[in-house]
Image (cartoon, rainbow, N blue to C red; front, side, top):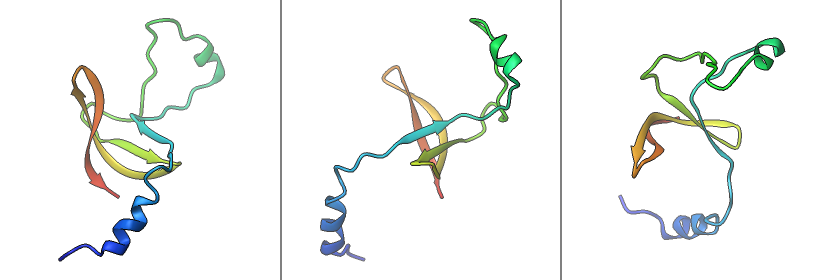
Length: 83
């Protein structure tokens, strides 16, 4: 199945559009007193287990899930599921 050239050209017009992309490891709800009590080395428990997929959020919309990887000494996201 070949790609429609017109649709490819249309997508090219969007190439310069900037999106807010967030990789979300998890969430937690804390009372302000617990937040204020955090010191260096403090731990905030997240609602996920080690090895659980993380979320890729684009402009506030959950878009994909994946796993954290290390690429050239930096953290990255390997997409395993597009939603």
